[in-house]
Every structure is written in C-alpha cells, then in structure tokens.
Length: 460
Image 1 (cartoon, helix red, strand yellow):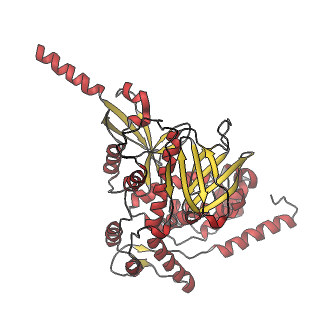
Image 2: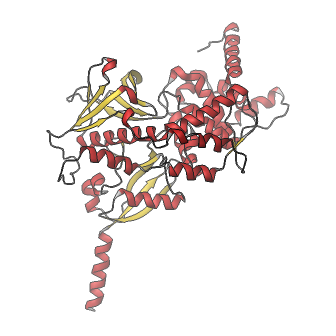
C-alpha cells in the first residue's frame, strides 16, 4: 500500500512538472506538445520540425505575444522566461500559446528549400498582404491577387460566355475579400474587382501553381509594409501612445510614424546605412553611418525585455541577409538573362543537390547560431542568466553593422555552382522563373480607367 502511494505521489509530481504548449501555424492549424517546467524553446522547435517532417524551418521562428506584439524566442532560453509566473503555477489543463511566424523575409522563394516551409511562408504572406495599408501601390495588389489566384486555382476554364453568364461566373469565381485588402474593396467596389481580377488572372495562364506561388513571394517583397516585421516604439519615454514603428525588412530597417491610422515613412535604412544599434533598458538607439549626416535616433520600447529581443532579431536578420545575398545574386542573374532573351523553356533544377549545396554553405543556419554570436559579443564575464526584465541601468547592448568585415558564407569564387545547377538538365522538377507580363496589363487597366472617366463614372 505504501509503495502504491509513493507511485501516485511520483506521478502527481511529474504531472505538476509538465506543461501543455500549443503552437499556432500560419495555416490556422495547430500543434500540441508536452514539455517539462525547465524546457527551452529548442525542445518545442524540435517537436514542430518532427511533426512537419522537415529538417529546418529556415525563415521561421517561434514567437510569443507580449503587450500585443510578437517577440521571437531565444531558443536557448527557458520557456519560463517568456510565460512568467503562469508557467510555474500552470498545469497540463491550460495550454501555453506559441506562434510559428516568419522571422526572416526573402525576395525569392527559391531560397526556401522545403516545399512545406515555402507553402507556410506563402500562407502567412497572403494574410499580411490582406492587412496591408500601402494605398499608393494599388496596381501591385492586382498583380498579387492574380498570382494568388493562379497559385490556388490554376488556369481558369476558357470558353465563350454570354453576357448573362459572365456576370454569374464572375460572382461565383472568387471572393474579393480573400484576395484584396478591405480598403481597396471599399475604394473600387466589389463589381470592379470581380470584373477585372479574372483578366489579370488569365495573363498568368500556363504557370504552374508552384511557379505562381514563387511569383507571389517575389512581388510581395516589393510591398512597402508587406515583407516587414513591425515593432512599436515611443519618441518620448513618458508618452502614452506608441506612434513610431520600427520595421525589420529584407534589406534593412524602416522607421514609420503613424498619423491618422496611416504609416508615414520617416527613414529607410539599408543594412549598410546603419552604423550600430544600442540598447539600454527601454532606450533604443539607432546610429546611421557618418556619411548620411543624420542625428542619432532615440526611441523607447515597452520594456527592457522588448529591447533585447528586438536587438536580437535585428542581429539575426542582418546575418541572414549576409548569408543569402550571394545565392540571391545568382538567382537574379538567371532572371535577368531570361528577361533579356525572353526564354520560354523551363530551367530544370536538381532540388536534392541544390539542398545539399546550400546546406553545406550554411544558408539554412539556425536562429540560435546567429543569436549566440550576438550574445557572445555583448555578454560580460561571469554574467548569470537574467530575469525576465532585469537589466541594470548601466548595462547596454550594442550591435555594430559592418558588412565589409562579415565572413561570406559562400566563397565568391564558388558561387557560379548555383547558376550551373539551376540551368542543368539532369532531373525532373521544372522551375520556370517567369518573365514580367505586366506592361500590357497595366496599360489595359489605364484604358479601363480612361474609359470610365470619359463615360462620366468616378475613377476613384
């Protein structure tokens, strides 16, 4: 009897030390895992990798919501640092929520090696585009809608339609709410989008769904607030509202001010424009290179916890940019060659060999490797693990951006292997880098607007 009581007590103790974590995916699906009280983010990531059946998430990270903002986990830190007292008092009955989100945006989907990860990236980017407020890029939203329709529906059935059938067909063809931001639907009207959306979609006839998805990813990188992770900041520490947004983008950092619900761009820094980022508690400083003759920018984050994680995200994003720029350069060269010669044949790519070579080049290096380098540069000897928000006022973290001293992940002399590989004809999977088809489409849209103006209909 005594032994039985001891077993029950042991089981009860083990249950108390376990926590239920739910990971929400961009596809609105979720994964569940059980971890111990002392588990770290790395353990949760390993569960996600296993359940997705991939070896590397490349551009994704695990995030937690703090003060209505997504902050990416340091995978080597304990989960208790992110969930606080709730974690220590929790049980298996109440799940702790994490989010799998894009941590590094790319200009070309070809940099994402796994088709599953590429699909997740596309899915999150689709939702981001629908929330976009880039009203000055209206034509781009039509292009993006056409690419998304081709990626999700494929070629539209072609046949002759009567006028009555056309109207019915358009109304049952797609929902504007699934492909256009709400402000654009209100601005143009559903009928306008239902009428002209299919015209642009037809321009992409012949593209496979995977090719259309790659085209969507490429186009979305040109959207001002599309491929960007935003963090809210204040210009003065005592201000109640955070009207400054720092955007971590593909090529650098954008600074916006929110005015009347709209984003006004204040500064657009490439990575080479920034000399350093410095963090001290809530204080967040951005120093541009001397040649720009700009004063030091000082903003305030909600907490020291936010500051450290934003700095780490900037460090990792810069490293990712450096690690992928040579491969991206080769991809662009191939696209330029195709555009100049208007090739219609497909490039064939040995994806297994491409994956192996890119992996050997550390293109898929994990977030923790980048973070470890940033921590090593700022850690003090004998420094103990910090509490959730514990930063002494005298301590400051600094990130210097000097691209001239960065180590190249790909030896410049060996980069041509990527071009040779993409142009080889040894395997199965065709990979078409589509040439721009939008000149004629843009002219057609202009003609529609001119015609409406001549007929006395409002153009706006």
